[in-house]
Image (cartoon, rainbow, N blue to C red; front, top):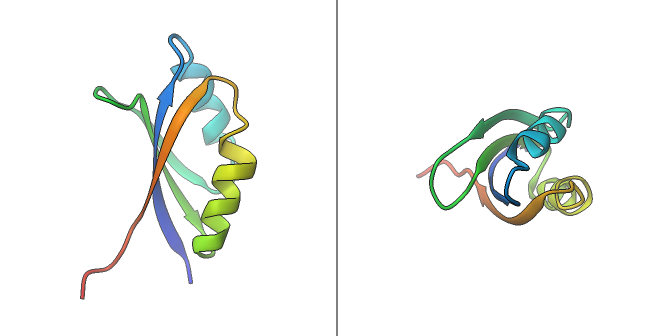
Length: 79
């Protein structure tokens, strides 16, 4: 089942542009926005399930230089 996730990203000072460029190059990333607040970037992803989201974050996102911290939020459909 397709899964949408929002990855809230804190970057090192001056690294938001480099991190944004690296994120948008990933196939699973749909949009990347720089934001003002406790996080510097919000990336929206579409993957084929919750486990795939975890794999994406661990193997492709966390390894991007300049990322300090992430919080991943899965989208849900209220019933």
